[in-house]
Length: 228
Length: 289
Image (cartoon, each protein chain N blue to C red):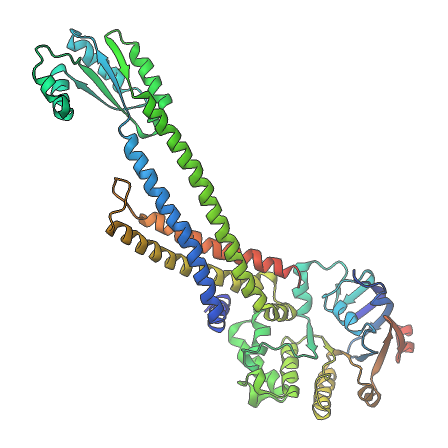
């Protein structure tokens, strides 16, 4: 599903590479943690996956798309096959939870008559069926993140990318959101979650890619990666 | 309702103050352009009225047989520059002089012999009312043997020509300047709207919206703002025009307001400005997200 082959990324303003000769493969059905300190390159890896950034060298392939040569007009097609979740939720403040989720369907040109049922289903999946008409400011952090996850899931993407999704949440909300991501993964969606919450990583028993200074210094499934 | 139109109207509702500010800015920019347009329009009208007085007069030798004159008039009437041809006999010329030149009335009364020759007066078609074409017609008239002298007020026609040239150039320069200022002001206003909704644009892109989907609501919104601004500008122009007319300030000729077609053009200009300004602003912004 996702393959990085000797990928480097240098920003014009930076002296060191944000990502340096990174290679790994994530297959169907996997749940992968990207860990490391701030500035280790986790977010850049995710940005390369959803084509917010392009590799300086090497090859990135996600869901059949080659990111390096992807034309601007092809980016929406890639993103419709991805769900993306951020630490700061990135919800539209003036829209209700249901409208935020529906928005992701509307912009992709989904049939209008099918949207309410799909929104209701996914809000139910994240446990927010009762709060569909609430505005983001009326929801707790954990609930807002669930809306963001619902929005990411509503297009049934094969891959879900989450950049520090529990970074702004308390412990209870963190557990709830993480469990939700595990459920989504169990249903068949690949989940890549960047986090520096080592406690969560340690207890989860999932594949972990640890990054330091732009390099992958540890891959808990390195044997599996090599055999692939 | 179409999704893009719905988004545009939603944006209007959610950013009422900014939208009102945009419409006001567009309205004033178009108001100034419209006012200038009105001045240019009336000035052009006044010049046209003056130009209607451009006439070529061929004075005819006395005792020329009337058949010869009639035949020549048919030839002259088909000159491409000529609108109408009129024969003025000696008697008619004298009557007219007595009527129009009242200060010489006594002199004309005491005359024993009419000193005024008969003439042929030519009006030119509007597009030929300038010194060059009048002189060309005069040259051709000289070719008729019964023509004694040809006059077309060369000096003032030339002055009229240069006045027209200056008015045209100044009009074009000021008109372009106003239009440019309008475009810049409207562009800045719309850019503020785009920046205010930067987060929304970013989210749209993240969930897979195409660039055209992102642009759509902004373009519709820009066009609506342009239309509203244009309408307000037209109303303001109409008020100023009414006040001017009430004060009887004019150029010695009847003042006129925009025709429905011209008013439509001003509105269309507003819509295009709003649409174009939005397109430039949002496209520039999209290059960075």
